[in-house]
Image (cartoon, rainbow, N blue to C red; front, side):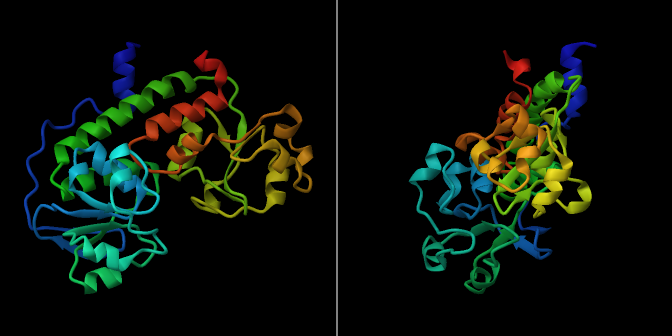
Length: 291
């Protein structure tokens, strides 16, 4: 099969309907808190309270609209110079209001919408959690901020870059069973979460079943019984110190990998750097494909 056609077929972007018209305001939509919200006019002063949202806005040419970001927004470089508004669970409400935003973008978690709405500020919750939502909500953000054409172009580019990695990993003969730890509690990722989909696309077989949820807290004994061939997100010394874990295949064969900080950050953000995150993860799972 022609390589270019295969990429197009895998990504499903053979046609995207051409350039998008400008957003018409007032724009009414249902956000991720289930609220019906009306954005009265094109936002000019935006506060983003999620790092992934900050990245997405910059990737669709709306970085100049940002007047404040959460404490963890650190990419691209432009957002590091913006006023910090605290974290999702410890926001600085006064600082947010002082920026006089006409839009604040929040998560469905953290309960920021109450006090900000009472202050007369338009608040929209946009919170992608599944793989498909990363793309659909990029388009939603594009529509909200009148950058729909740029959002569509970004989605096309992301899917194309992801497909290039999938071409390498799709037909590998040995796909190791894998456990990806995102928190030492331990929490892991289900196969339907955006991180779980990336793990599968990287050429691994997730030991966490979909029935456990997208980001489940896992009984360590379950991991021992599942006996993964690859453990990601924890170092070998820490894993080896856990009761019974020395019997796990991954520890016996030395396939326990602590994910580098930059890659770990990209993996945890459902935003425009998803393709880079996948490529980095695939290099760990199947280093032989990238020599």
